[in-house]
Length: 326
Image (cartoon, rainbow, N blue to C red):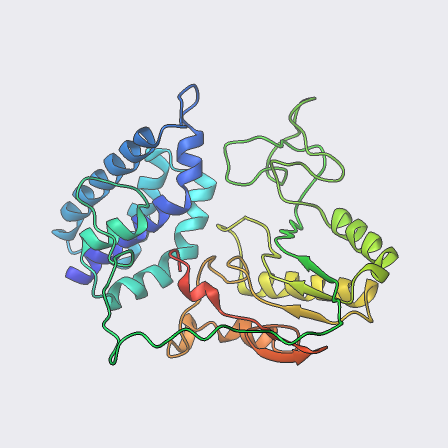
């Protein structure tokens, strides 16, 4: 019973964090630049969630009812519209329930971790200063003198393309959903419609990515190789699938191969490559919650590795393990 109660708390708090921009954007006419207003809204919502969960816990609810209750709370609290709520809860449910069933954190510690603000007496166990005594004391510092070389490397660094396959010119560019310029939104007005090449309020269409590739192909004499540091998919976190993430990855890699076939590319994952977003379980997590599906799909083109190239060592680190939202 305790696990079910914890699971629902974590599920709702994760939902609260993911849909936080939607919640704040819905407060039209209010000054959201002040952190105290932001904190107050999130704290009040958290208190309401915990109170509701304690009542549900006494009813011995099932996971199906947990999901239904989370969707209903999402809709009634205005965290997102009905369509988003019904998609985002199932998207995160299985992983969130698994994590919460295996965590040693208390509910107060989870609130302090997920709600990135000072909410009463919340406590963040991952943001504490520890003093570690080094046996034998601190070793002497030996200045490093790099070798002198007459090599100049020009490197192209690309990150956060965020291609949206559903981007549609003419649709609303400003909306109440976390991501606009895509179905099922209606057409927008003169100052609120997606442009042919993109909109700063949305992710970008494929033709803009292709135009970028054409430009890079025409100017490729200005760089020797490429660093690609991920975040290829769009921000539609509520409706993504593993197969869809792999398709986007493969499509982007194919474009680089097509337009820059002679340029070596070194790729690292961003936090948006996973499904759900920000989900990079450690290697000992196996089965349906494993991240091996992504690593296997990208094994020939990227990952986390160390390689010697053109006189330097290139190291790709899995920094998503350190992401607080992971």
